Amino acid sequence: MRELELLQENLEYQRLLTEKKLLSTSVHIVDSFTDTIKDWAFEFGTTLFLNLVRGNSNRKSDKKEETQEEE
Image 1 (cartoon, rainbow, N blue to C red):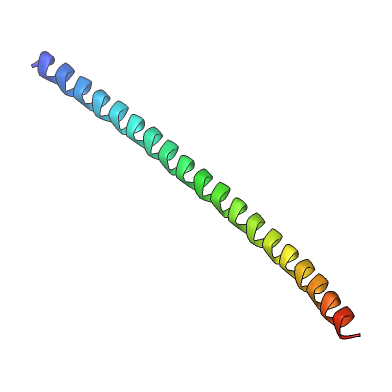
Image 2: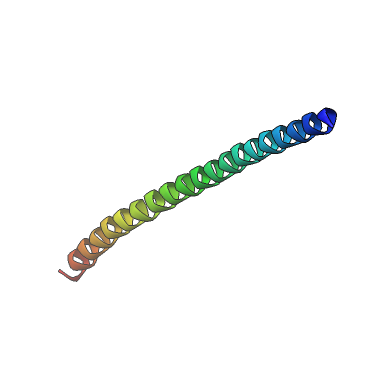
């Protein structure tokens, strides 16, 4: 009877240990995914912002050239 109790305690311990490992792995996967999304969002936002700034400066120079050609 004592052996069955020890076996049951061992199984319970193994279950808890496995749950902790699963939780740790899940947390690592989610952290990795969110870091990847943050990096992508930052790069996309930076590229978009730079394109907007460059676009505005290109338009200004185009407008200046057009007004100079008209004169």
